[in-house]
Every structure is written in C-alpha cells, then in structure tokens.
Length: 253
Image (cartoon, rainbow, N blue to C red; front, side, top):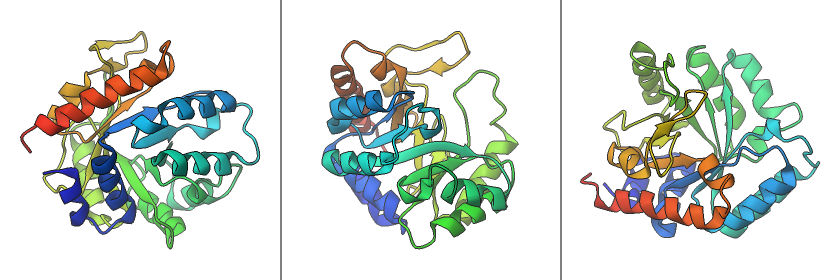
C-alpha cells in the first residue's frame, strides 16, 4: 500500500501529514542529527533539508543551545518541509514524563511533532504524554525493537508494546523497529542502524542497507553518522534518499 493511501487510514494528524509528505516529497529518509554544536546542526539542516521527511534530534546533547532554538528549528522545518522528531526515549512513570515533555529547559511538546518512549513503565507513560499533547498535533512512537546487539527489546516485550500501541492508536503513530510489526497500515515503522554497507561498529550497533530495511517492511530509514560524518552530507543524503525511496517503490506491499 502506498504512503498516500495509508494517510487515509489514520486519524492522527501528524501521521497523516507524514504519509502525505513522504509521497509528495518522495523521501523516506530520517536524518539523526546527533551533533553537539547548534551551529553545526543548523548547517547540516541547510544541507540535507530537501532530502528528508524527518529530522531526528537529541536536543539534550547540544552544548551551546540558544534561547531561540525552537524558533530556528521551526523556521527550517517550514522552509524545507519536514517533521521534527525529538528522540527523547521517555522511560519513567506517567507523572514524571508529563513534566519532562512540557517543562524544564526544552519544552519538547511545543516544537517536536514526534517523540518516543519505552513501554517498560506500562500504559501510564503513554497516558501521561498524551495528556500533555492534548490539543496539539503530536504523535508518539513506541520503542518495540532496537538495532544494537543483544538488546532486550524483543519477544514478549515487543508483543506487549504492540498491544499498547493498538490501544492508544489515536496518539501512538507507530514504532521504532527493525521490520514491519503489524498488519495495520496506519502504523509507521522507523528503523535505525542504516548504512549503505552492512556491518557492526565497535559499540555493537548493527547496520543494514536501505534496501534491506525497506523490503523488510519498514517505512522510514534512520541514518546518522553515514550522513553527518561524511565529507559531503548533501550528496550522501541524496544517495540514501534515492536508495530508500526506490526500495519502497519496488516492494510488493
């Protein structure tokens, strides 16, 4: 099923916007901009903005974050037409994540279209985040699987995570996972650990190619170091975009 057709299956406005954006812009590339300098982050966005459907941030690793960081990110979001995913990986009880999502230094709910959480605390974590997001166009991804060797996000954990997603499908838009996890096509699967060549790094992060990931049923490839550490991030982003979207166009479902 094509992205534009799947946009009609969901009532979540973020998911609908994302499917439509991917179809119109012809990209299923999410860049993980794991940079610690804000000016470098802005420079990277200006190089790769035309190639991506999502910019994934770790806002808490930036060492020189300006007061108007959200304004700057939102302006670039509008300029290049992508969504912002703050990879916060919330993992606490509902009351605590409510404060983490809306308070503190970052006020994540005010600027990030998408965030994510672990399902370890149970449904209360989703309910807490959903309460904060009420009235805003926001979406949540659940960490159902991970790309590192010997991780514990598998088996019963993954099954329970999928059950939780189905229960809260007005707010949960999909999963971080290594392959298609459910038949319901309103859910989005985003897969990390993507490079043009398969392999494993020294911290046991496993890498698969864009073609392998998309043909396994994932919808969006997440690429970090393969792009932002390259000599020419713009050209690398184009390569990943083309490989990912071509794989999508040729898969059978």
